[in-house]
Image (tube, rainbow, N blue to C red; front, top):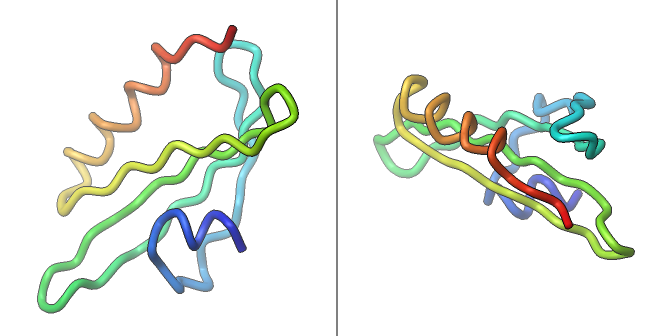
Length: 79
């Protein structure tokens, strides 16, 4: 599972969902991560672009930080 590898997670509950950002179809997966005593969240956006697998991964230790990071996907431009 490429998305889990990108997120460095073995979270089996990260079911992919579909999203469209700037006319590009993406698969979005949300993962829970545990690094020692620190709990984190990760979001991975994956798409096929020009015949290649393209992934964007964001991780943070608070939901607010993770949301702010993932909002940056709205500014990605696919050429």
